[in-house]
Image 1 (cartoon, one colour):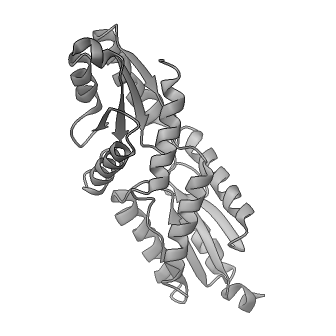
Image 2 (spheres, chains in turn red, cyan):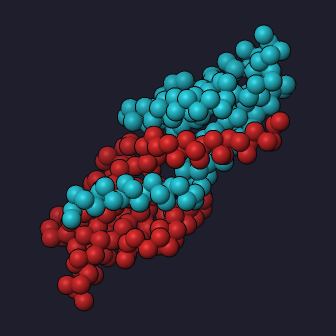
Image 3 (tube, chains in turn orange, red):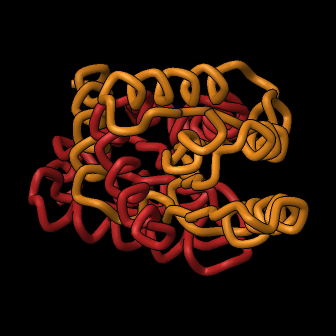
Length: 131
Length: 131
């Protein structure tokens, strides 16, 4: 079982976390939508702070289950302190404790045309309130 | 000129702001991409904190130029304290000073399938690092 797991790539979403429930609910919803796409055998969600499970705990759990390859996907709009320092520090800590594990780190969304599509859809709905 | 402006809807993006340059650069890039779509005559970008111009200053500037309808579009992934309190407080303040202005407030991105597409693209790129 341990050897089989080693060839799989696990996808771990990491969200910002929030004192309100919206961020947690959205990260959970995105994880479910990604599971439904069927691209990754293992899809987990996690948070940097304020909500559970925390990124470090999810990564350590996968490592202790023998998962050898993990992609960490930040659910963040742009690079910033959270993506360039906070998340990378957690990844470095997990790698130090599990030298054999291989972790890829995905870029945040960036200025993608699909973000523009979403912004224009949301703006159109809001414009109906004032027209 | 003042009357003509009143029929237009101005779109105002509002980003989180960051001590690093990435968030500012992304919000500026998104504003330019939206301008290129040609849907709104006026497209402005702004920040809640840490970067300029601030949302309040952009809204006050539009109001003083006679723009009567504005859609505020939060460049945020999910609802949270910033979108349900901080931004709405700025909008309420501007409305109080300019009772004639009409401001629509757009939803954040939410768990949109296009976000899933972006996450899977970024994850695929990151997986190449470890395969």
